[in-house]
Structures are given as C-alpha cells and as structure tokens.
Length: 142
Image (cartoon, rainbow, N blue to C red; front, side, top):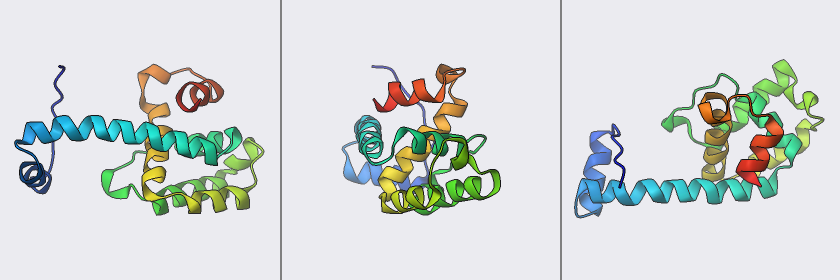
C-alpha cells in the first residue's frame, strides 16, 4: 500500500492515538474515509447546483488557497459573493446571483468544504491543467 506523509497537529495525533489502536491505523482509516466523503458530497452538490453555477464557483476560486480552518459554508459563500460582486463572474455563466446565493446558503459545511476543495483543485492540479470547465464538471461530477 502506498504511504502518505502528512503533517498533523499534536491534537490530531492525540485524537488518532485515542480512537485507533495506533496513529497509523487511524490515518489509514481516516484518509480513505475522507476521500469517500469528498466524492459523496460532490455528488450531492452536483445535484443541487447546475453546470452554470458550478462554473461560477470554479471561476470564483481562481487563485484562492483554502485552509483547513476555513472549511465552512460561510467562507465558500463569502468567496463566491465577492467574486460575483467585484468581478461579476456569475454574469459570465448566465447565473442569477439570488438563486445561487440561496443554494449556497443551504449547503452543509461538509458539502461546502467539498465544493471548495473541488473548485480550488481545478486551478492547482496538473491533471486538470488546460481542461475546460465543462469537461472538469463532466468528469468529476458526472
């Protein structure tokens, strides 16, 4: 099995040791579970948001670095709201801001976090370099 080296806080290390037989056993459980939760959440988000709205979120996350402590619906909402207000990214894709606003506010923090990871991954991953928004949405949310 391939290994991953991750840096975690002392609190996270303590939690893994307390809830699993070993820190490694905990990490081997949590990482695949987190990936599965990401894809499950993105499938749910893709049922809630249409393609034009997903494109708007993608564009709103260009050049944005997300941090674990900012993985909440409020941060997603603020990022997209700012991009729509200042750069009118929703107009580029024919999206109604009030409709998108209502949908974003209904997302859970878990779904919002998945959407933020998904949107920022488009811009930083070498795999998606040069892939159109449409193709990215189709391949990752289809």
